[in-house]
Image (cartoon, rainbow, N blue to C red; front, side, top):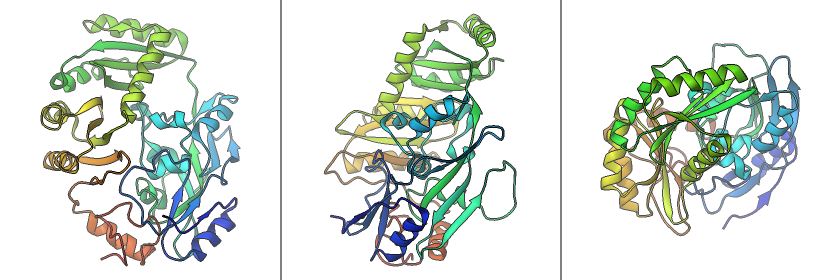
Length: 381
C-alpha cells in the first residue's frame, strides 16, 4: 500500500510534492500503464499528474503545442483538430484516456510510428522535477537540432524514473484530408518480412503497415485524389491486395488495437528485433511460448503478443529476444501475478545506473519500475 497520494496542479506544487515526500515517489496519470514494467515500491508516495492538464501554449504557425503532462492525448487531438492539426501518434491505449506524460514515459507507440516515429521523435521539450526538487527544462518550441544533453530522450521509456514530468512540448503535423486502408493477405508469420518488403518496395509510401489477424493492413494518407490513386496502384501491384471500405477499415484497426492491449488473464509483451528476423522470432514464440494476439510491424521490427501469465514463460520470451539481439518489455500483467518485466540487462545498464546515481542517488523516483536493471531499494549500485 502506498503511504499517501498527492495531486499537484502547478509545477511549483509538483516540485514541493516531490521534494517533501518521505522516501520513494511514483508518478501516475490515467493509470492505463499501471501494470506495465515492474511494480513500484509499495511504500511510495503516489503523485498524480492529472491536475497538470490542458494546453499551455499552442503555436499553429510553428506547428507546436505545450501541454501539461497529465493531458489525455485524445482530448488534445480533439482540440488540435479545430486547427487542422494533430499529434501524429496513435498508440492503442490513447482511446482509454492515456496521458501525454504517461505515453512518453512508457515509450509507447502505434502504427503511425512507421512514418512519424514515436513520441521520442515528436517531443521537442520537457519540464521535469528531479528528485531533489530541481525544476529542469530541456528543449522548447523551436524545432531544431542542438548540441548538449537531451533530458527528454533520457525520460522517454524510463517508466517514471529520473524525474516527474510537468509539461511537454510536442511537434505537430497536419491532419490528412483523406485516409485509405489496403489489406494484403499474409497468413504465415514466417513470410512477414517478405510481405512487408513487397509493400515498402512500392512507391505508395504508407503511413502505417501492420500485421494483424492474418493480413497486412496498409494505411495511406494524403489528399483525396492522391490516396485513391495510391490505393488503386497498390492493389494492382500486389496479388490479393484490396482496399477496404471505410467501415471495414475502422473495424480492422480497432481489432488491431484490441490485440495490442490483449485479453484479460494473459501477459502482454512488446518485442523489438531486426525486421529480417521478425517472422522467425514470432513463429518460434507461437510454437514455444503459446504466443497469441500477435500484432507486428514488419518495417520496424516491433511486435506485441500475449503469453500465459507464467513467470518462466515470460522469462523464456525475454531470453529468446535477447538471443536474437532484440528487446522485450512486459506491458501488462494479470492481477496477482509476479512476472519478470525485463530481459537480461544490456551492457548499457551500466550507463543507466550511472545516470540514476547522478540524477537520483537515493533512487526515489519510480523506485522498482526498472527492477532489476535499477535496484529496488537503496542507492543505485
